Image 1 (spheres, rainbow, N blue to C red):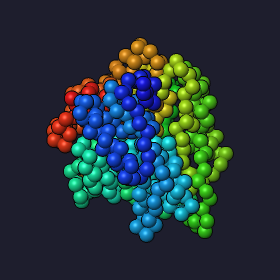
Image 2 (image 1 turned 180 degrees about the vertical axis):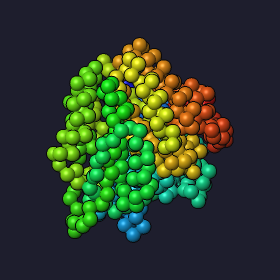
Image 3 (image 1 turned 135 degrees about the vertical axis):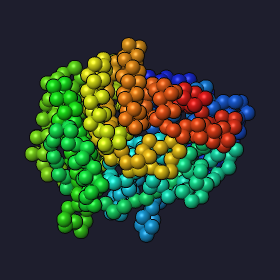
Image 4 (image 1 turned 90 degrees about the vertical axis):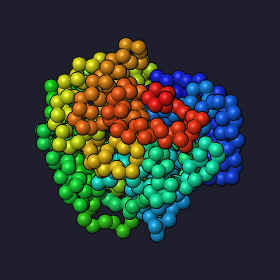
Amino acid sequence: MLNDASRLNPTPVLRHLTLGGRGSTVLLETLRVELKAAAAEGRPVCASAARHSMGGQSIPRDGLAVTLTGDQPEVDSATLTCRVSAGTRWSQVIRRLDPLGLSPAVMQSNHDFAVGSTFCVNAHGWPAPHGPFGSTVRSLRLLLVDGTLVTCSPAENAELFGLAMGGYGLFGILIDLDIAVTPNLVLVPVVQRMEAGRFAQAFMEAVEGDPQTRMAYGRMSVARKSFFRDALLTVYRPLDKQPATLPAAVSGGFLNTVSRDIYRAQIGNETAKHARWLAETRLNPALGSGIATRNSLMNEPVSNLANTDMRRTDILHEYFVPPERFDDFLEACRAIIPKARAEFLNLTLRYVGADPVAVMAYAPSPRIAAVMSFSQEASPVGEVDMMQVTEQLIDRVVGLGGTFYLPYRLHARRDQIAAGYPRLAEFIAAKRRYDPGLLFRNAMWSTYFA
């Protein structure tokens, strides 16, 4: 039995293999033998790493589950690239790059995800003004259904590259990637508190209008009296005089703000929500400068916010909103979220540049990404409530010309998938062309695409 980060998807698998070694002959031959056997038996195959998706996207029911592990990345400082195996965690990448004065160009906001998984879900981060992680991948190697190992990039096998980027492992097993890196820097934050209605303009001006902006994010109050009406914008720019030797990357907690205890205390507690907002907007800026290296800002484990209450589970949503419709998005959230049974814990706002490459692109033009965290009862009642909230939010966001992220609970309707991802039919047709036996399958394929 395997499960994922939601703890709501216990799924039987026939076999579970853990494999490592960056493109080694043993790894490739083992996978080829397993693919041939699974095809002969008509069983699905799915390769993954940390299984942080929440809807069974990383689990093949009654099939072969492969967990890929990482190894030491290879860095080319001259070309500012780094070759990593698909199962390598971002913490390993930072640990390798940091002594060299380098940093990932884009990575997810937590370091315990795997690099290959980041590409397969085409995750974004908060370095600015970048698009999703896939835009910083120079090339990759993909093992196809027949065991052929192909190199893909924006120039070579470009169609397959755009399908695999955000393709959730449905086109092959990702073996390794060449990713872009950039100089590490000491960054200084500027924190601004403002009315929510001013946020979108201020955020876009900071990211797109100021070439000194290196990282940026926003938050909003989740207390009911000020729900999504009070905003915080944090922008990081380089320290004027960079030190000759940068301090080693450290992990400072939830973006150096609130502790897990305060975060968890928000469940059913408006006083704690006010206290958390006070900590973010007043106490934390007053207690320290916030100066940190680029690597330290991204070197955060998701365990900082780990839920230990087995009666509840954390559920993420993410919506990608055209900046000019952001105020309408906030109004929709105010109308829907406070009525939910689930407890709303956090909203983080990030910038995502346009993605012209991925077939299943969620940002065809620049978007404000709204990452939401709910605490849901681990019960049928909690599940129904979450499904209803999700459908309502998706309807409103798609109506605003935005879309929603796919790695989370599979609660969207099929018509909502088609509305949010207009190249869906092209994606499905290509899947059947590259994998006519549908060997690479997961719960997402069965729910949305089959």
